[in-house]
Image 1 (spheres, rainbow, N blue to C red):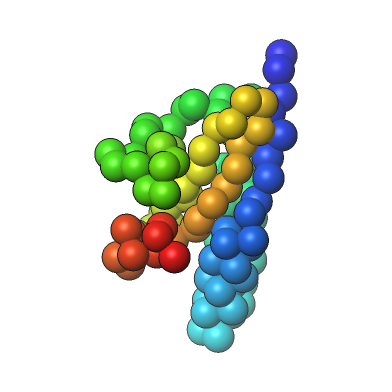
Image 2: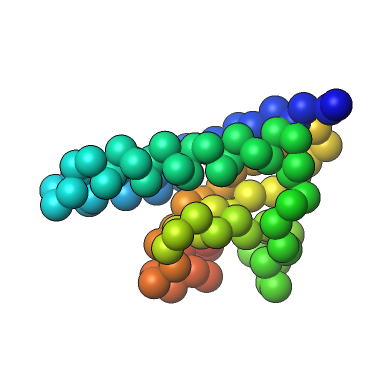
Length: 101
């Protein structure tokens, strides 16, 4: 069974760090659980990288796929045998504004 390499870009690392910082201010144990849940779901992409639907519009010439984990949306692309995680965004935010930054 082929395994894809997962790379979390700096933008996604910033996103998840901001999420943890924010949640830790109110619910420290929830922040850890949410982080673990997101990482576990991302790890599924090693085996099934195309499991999530394509996002309906291209941003910066990327055709993103969108993974949903509770209220968070994980935007990623599959490039050859690599999965690049680009952003992890709260679904309440202006998605296109965050993807373009």
